[in-house]
Image 1 (tube, helix red, strand yellow):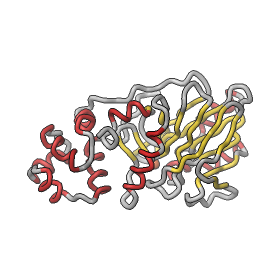
Image 2 (cartoon, rainbow, N blue to C red):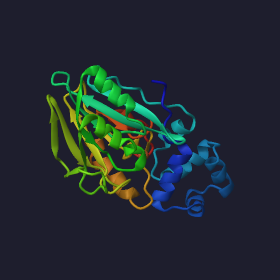
Image 3 (cartoon, helix red, strand yellow):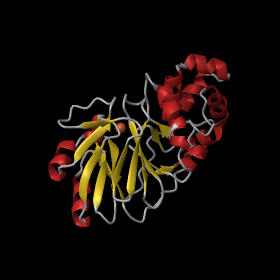
Image 4 (cartoon, rainbow, N blue to C red):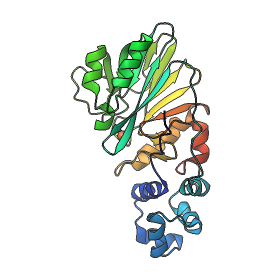
Length: 274
Ligand SMILES: [Fe+2]
């Protein structure tokens, strides 16, 4: 798979932090002691380190990780699963969206996580590997993540599941609570509520593969986090309390952008590396 670009650049991160904390340009300029002209220059893509350092403190962003992001000095090392995991990255308008397939090698039972724009690759892989997709687990129901749900369900007969607080009008979809468990042979899947970006967004913590896996949807991205105008603080707190409590080597499978790990995000994600 070609290298998937990071979902957010440093200007996105700054804008999300400003919006989330409700700090406008005038206030940031005054608090951080930087001119409006310098702030505008940074926002337009000119990363002035001295300005980044000053504003990062007021936006609760890690200064080193923000600088690394601004100068393209970091890209997450891509974890490898030897079995039972596949990632799909499909174009959706001018962006791209991820979906995932996890399976148990012995029973050949599989679970899909979201559909992406096009579930064709997932359906083909299930067929060539002799897998039965029993479940489609939705991280959240924003259109880009569920765009091919009717086709995936028609092709597989899988049950569709979503968090109980997530709006979902797909016929027959079932809702779980936080800390529910599902099993596919040796694989266990636990539901963690990491809402904020959407009201019932779920992170699925998967054990029984080579290493722990968390399918986080748009809770978190490599080097950034999901946006929310209204629930930024909730999303941030849920990420800290739930995703960052997982084992360090947990692979984070995000709704957009590349794979990452808890350990890498602790150092390189400006929102959490502070
Ligand atoms: Fe999304």
